[in-house]
Length: 77
Image (cartoon, rainbow, N blue to C red; front, top):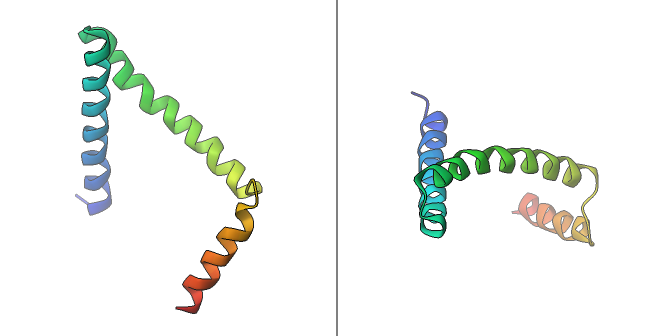
């Protein structure tokens, strides 16, 4: 199994376990916690997609300058 895939699967299992545990702690319901643990990563993936699109278009609040400076430093090293 490729390392990237294994890393992704282990991260997913950690994420789902934490999500389930927190949801169960708040609700006390196995089914609600399971639903939240399964739905949240899907919503998060959609949000991440649009977040990436927005950042590729134009960085907000002067971050363009900061990112440009960081890239320049990285290239100079």
